[in-house]
Length: 413
Ligand SMILES: *Cc1c(COP(=O)(O)O)cnc(C)c1O
Image (spheres, rainbow, N blue to C red):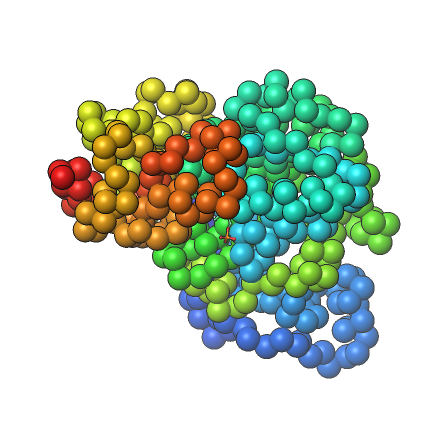
């Protein structure tokens, strides 16, 4: 593969590994299970530890199979560098562990993946102040900023109600104020959207979802887009300032979060995720087309009270989605009219599986208020616009006609 030519999204993922020498010409980056890495010259080992020479020290801080995946994600996001973690939540937790201190303030979208919402509640009792705002309008984010605000956190398309953050204008605000702008790109994936384009500093990807794509491995990542000027960030430890400023953020995240807390991605999982990522573009094309077809069908049915999908012209942020995203994503949610029990409806589905995951090749459905958003209680659910009958659909790659048949036959009582 020619190193200088710019290839398309999928070609880059497929052939990226071979830009570096791989043992025996193996087409896949091999799974390296060794925890330790030996050096003939002890001085070399010391140089690696001191960051003066590239190399591996101990499996918790890095592994060749995981590094190959990190390189792939950096390319997908057009970023500067990536660190992988055992799960998406470990990646989000790493932001808190590595970058925040007691007394710091976070402004976060109120429309969040349930466990991220729970994480903010946890850190709130550990001395970090969190303001939850309606991030579909930058004015709400700006109004919540204080001199102690270190991070603004948003999701691209919020799960499950599909609200879309005011991504570009929040990016401008964060750049002006020198605040780290974190965008959780899981719902769009780097194939549909690159948060770097709206000025994101750090991009979160739950690799478990669209990037791995088969529901057979957990993983998460943080990518530094290279946009943020780390010399403006007050929480960098002196020890990481020996590197060039572009590296400060990732150096601190790799040491203070990955090394000290140990949420390391294993090499086997990294292999599954890397192989899955090769077909991400193909899967997403199908998933987005299927989601659009299902959303249109349900939206036109009078037994359905509401459908939430950015691809529908009635969606409040349809315009932003059209402008920023390649397609509208593989997730939508809907509410049944009174008189149709959501559990009975789910039980009548023959293909779609009641299960809690997203971005799988199979279509998965879940009654949100009764499962993943159960713990937060009815008041907070109402505040997030989550009706008790809301069903979330993560659309798979099944044949479109089969999915349309399934969702429509289940409406016939
Ligand atoms: C699933 C998900 C996460 C967490 O990822 P895990 O790998 O399950 O820990 C974070 N953010 C979003 C938007 C998600 O959908």
